[in-house]
Length: 151
Image (cartoon, rainbow, N blue to C red):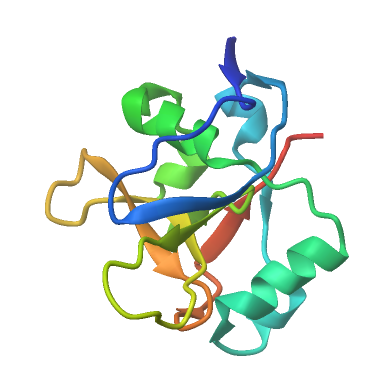
């Protein structure tokens, strides 16, 4: 059993900037319990939709999503990734408790909202990685789930 501090600021690498981070206290992490604790928005089961619709459903239903501190912990400790998340058909797990933006380096541009996801690197089967996805421009499908607190 491990405890993850979900109150500290998550890793933020350039050109990302932190826009929103839900502090969640100390999380007791148990990969066996967390394995089935994922959320799929009701609108995701119909068709590919924009990530903004998923985010809106998370906010309106007050879904207890995990933040990027958990993602950073799992990247550093891949042995603690739940077995269910390792299935070849599982897809990606997103940590909606932290939203990022892009640092503007020149003229003002359309604001970006990004969320980071955890997935297995297809080129190296044993490596896990993370990438930010633009929730306003990327389509979400049924293999793009949200990590939530285990009940």
